[in-house]
Image (cartoon, rainbow, N blue to C red; front, side):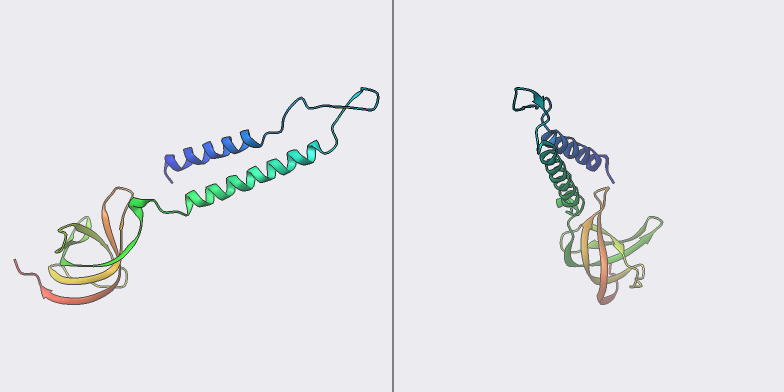
Length: 145
């Protein structure tokens, strides 16, 4: 996880605890003017702390399980020529001329073949485009130069 995520989480926890901190120095006057502990003040503090912790947990869950805009998955297809090298398998899309890294566990792709792949497009943490391939829609044969 990124340091940005942990920084946000820590800030949210600190803010929630600061908001739910019970007031200090509260005292109640007894029947003869004696200073006594207020009845129910500890119950209110417990309710505030539990509410703050629940809100913190909800915010952490929302931040953790909501993908960032640049990492959002989009279903689509790409058509292009498969290129395999030491870094992996890539495909240059003929429509937008962008190069996608191919993640294909169930599909066997040959180097130099023109194919149409269907899957989820996304950016990895380094900003590189990838396609998590669901199916090989069509194999058009060898690429033409």
